[in-house]
Image 1 (tube, rainbow, N blue to C red):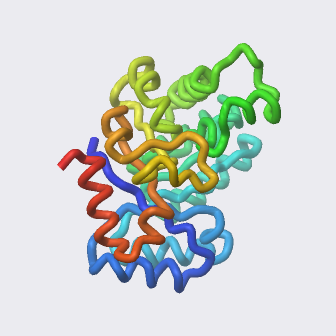
Image 2 (image 1 turned 60 degrees about the vertical axis):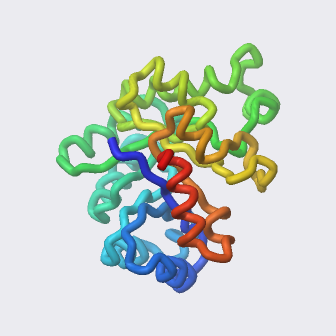
Length: 234
């Protein structure tokens, strides 16, 4: 499995996203299209970016009744994206129903279950989400990961901090995609559980998702290359 850096295109308009990609001088990169951009521009932004030769992680975090998720999955498969995700909290029936649709399609796509958002810490999990106070955050993430594997998804979205336990329990081939990456950990923004690219590599992450550190850089291409080298250990 090839490790990679996924650039989060957290823009509000098509023009902003495409102008940003112009800075990568024809390089093929892996990008994440999230709710903000997709809800504004719809499927056309996916088609345009695919046409430019980039890989796409469509980050819509599907979470609904199984039948609705089946329909949503079919729509996403028609867009020919490379990676998309579901909320693990939707449960086994939802995840496995979607997984069956993907397997029947014979399309080569990475499917993920979102465990705990990296903006969630243990206090939020216990006090706001009312998850049993006897459970640690990494235990809940592991349970969600086991649910994803049982549902035959490719892997999960989690913090890099949880990756070693996930790999130990579920195997090295179970994919981990990890947001919450910062060049320096003091730059938290709205993230709670963050690591550097080097730490993510050492912890065993397969993909890291990086947004603001690249988007806000004076030279995004240079920043991307530096982060990728640090993550890959080159």
